[in-house]
Image (cartoon, rainbow, N blue to C red; front, side, top):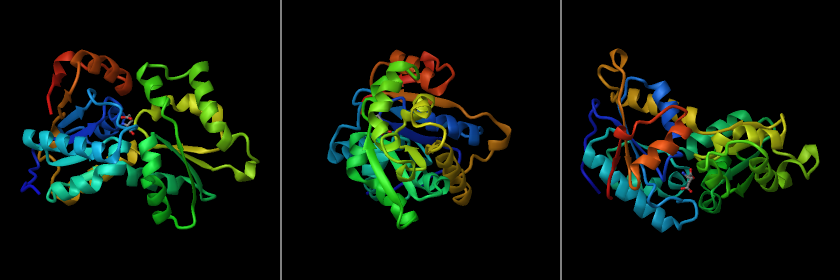
Length: 281
Ligand code: DGL
């Protein structure tokens, strides 16, 4: 356990196994443009989604240590896999640091979007195997039917920059047809949760496969809202947030130029090489 006191002028700290968490960063930066953000992408050890809970937790604790050492006021676990397995360990290690994951916000978004209480969750192998989303959804909406499906190939496909087209749709059809197409309409979920940072980038291909009916939700926007309200409640908003534009600084554990290149695809705007710093954990 560490002693730590958050201060309002410090940046928001966030991390992901790689560039995927930039989809959450984008939502956060839009919701809180006056806040500074320090983002760490652990690209040297990506993917997390195929690793054991013990390994993912060890990585998450090392990253938190690094970000706290740099100075942060809140920690956002912008990785579904790490949120699903390491949130309790992070909270136990840093009791005074507000720690927010993406699982609970994602589960809330799903429960709000579903009419029939039948929800499909797609994520990495680790996230699905651990069952954190399934538990969070059932806790918020008892009696809900939740189907979890690991879709690991979506991760390298998104990193390749293949956001749409026949290859992505073929992979999506292979994963999603058994849930959305090969069953009678009355048996289909009415909500699909994109419970992995990479999947929102493939949304239009996924939509083409599942058709117009199911709501497709992800955790980015609702996580940003949760962060905004946590900062406000804790008196942790930047004192000059309304009069300034916050800065964004990126840390990566491997190849800063590659992070800037692929990260720009995920963020939808350029990341300068000079904003990315290589760090060792
Ligand atoms: N960031 C991970 C997640 O959201 C996906 C990539 C990985 O497996 O590390 O689950």
